[in-house]
Length: 428
Image 1 (cartoon, rainbow, N blue to C red):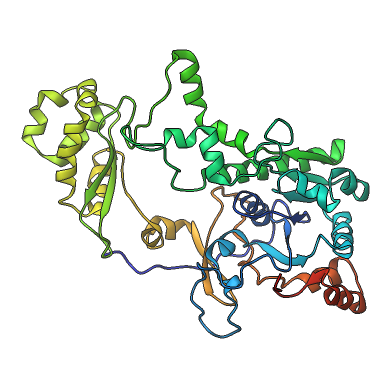
Image 2 (tube, rainbow, N blue to C red):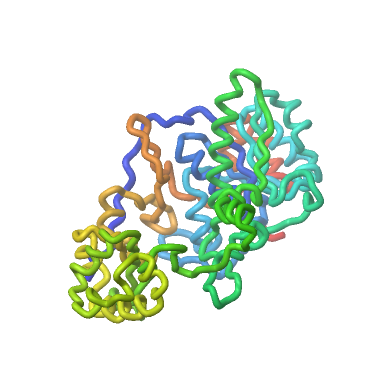
């Protein structure tokens, strides 16, 4: 049985690469928030700008209330808490002239504006690059439209599944005898977020030489990079790449196989891959099946690949006798690439995750110690774990106007009373 999950508080970092950089985050969904959560972990002060009515009052996925404060379900939605850590929260109504003026005042005091609206939205607000650069010529303005700011699909909108479909990713996802499938996670969004964070840092580095500039990251073009081998293969061979499920184009065995259940789950699995004869020999060492060892169908790599269906059936029946973690240890000792197939519950109990604090705990005022994944990179002299848990909605509206913009108490109260800004979630 795996141990109970352990979330250790992240260590503090007194020096981060982007200390002193301020980012105005106008992003929604997953792709944009992925970019800004990385910038926040790297030290940037990220101020997330939302409309006063941005969130549903009763989100279906809200986590249970633990007491000790007001019951505000919109502050306990899992994705909000995953992608809003290391940020501040401010609510502005950008459709109101007074709200736009507050935003423009912030632009003068910031380094980056990052948004992932469709191209027409910032123009509707009157907040396009020409207007923003007048207020701050050193600004880096990053936009993440689905299809780019030119071309016949310029004004079309899409979320990750639509980009997955158009990019070819969904065409390649699924089994050989089945239809295209949406990938199991937001590859399009996560990939675009990483690219946007990287290009933002590059533009900040170039700023000392050329001043401010725009960065355009079309999400479709970001995902095309993930299937480059398929496009090159089609061009060179003239054949359309096919769906393969868990199979490899030339190696066998290569797949996931059922094992004994753990953690009272209905099923558990192990991933096993043998790319060459040495790894196959290691598998046979653990398998100890004399019939498989002498079976002519599996004597060479090419024969194993041609007879992969029969091999998978035999391997699956054998793997089902074992705990996936025990079998992984034995196969790894024999030099066979193998790993248990882990879900979120298992990952939070994994010793490797504990040892590296890949997922740590951040104190959240309504959730207690809340899990947050750390960025995959580690900087030896400027470590960058998440700075803080996701803030409560609009918690920083008043502090930002007072501390950064220097507004008087009277002006702050006037902006909130008029609805141009808000310090709480409001009905539409």
